[in-house]
Image (cartoon, rainbow, N blue to C red):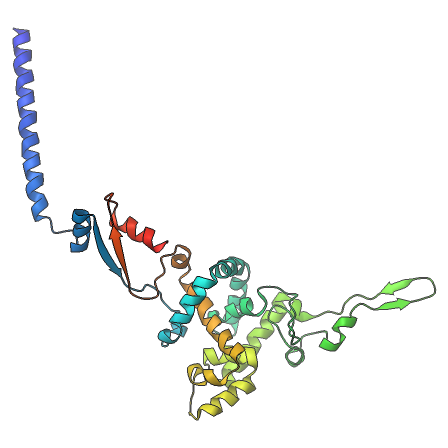
Length: 297
């Protein structure tokens, strides 16, 4: 009797399992035809195992640099491609210095974007000396150092910093004179004061201020006059500036834009313009994985 009941229960259990399996299968199949939650593109990729997807540009500019994106995008993209290692190295090194520079710029009510001038000027090398005679972190010339009260070693006497004084018994070496341009804190405050003065001279125009840091405010004023315009901006005077200054300002824009989008740049997902990807998907890989893979190539 127990065996019969057990056998009957087993058959009944099997019957009900089969019944619900068929029911669930039918429901799932029916639902698959009415599910509209997936976008057309993803459905096509899943069905045909191939397709295409268009992604919009995802690059953004700092607020103070908006308004002329089209005039710099091509330059930024080329720089980002050709000098990727430099940008990564500079960004990593900047973590030590930029927060301190930003704090000083804040005290003078200056845009934080100016901090990248430190990287452009000396690559964070306090002992840097240019052919023109600029010295230190911010590459300050003798005249500017004197005007803003920094102690400095004049260009003509730098080669004579170490002198030998011979006496009857011994030779004494005198140590090098102090040059505040090699002092990070002192030179950063002077750079901020200098830029603040240029902001007054140039009506707070950021790119004109940057240009003046490279070639002097006098040359910027001269270029402004040549345009014949009442209130010219950098893009108006660009062709009248030295080639070095033109590149300097474009590099200033580039570093700020790339660092503003650094996570996307580092992950190779930064898009400068609308981009279409053709997707070959023989393995049924998720679309987002394919796009990510294509972006990183």
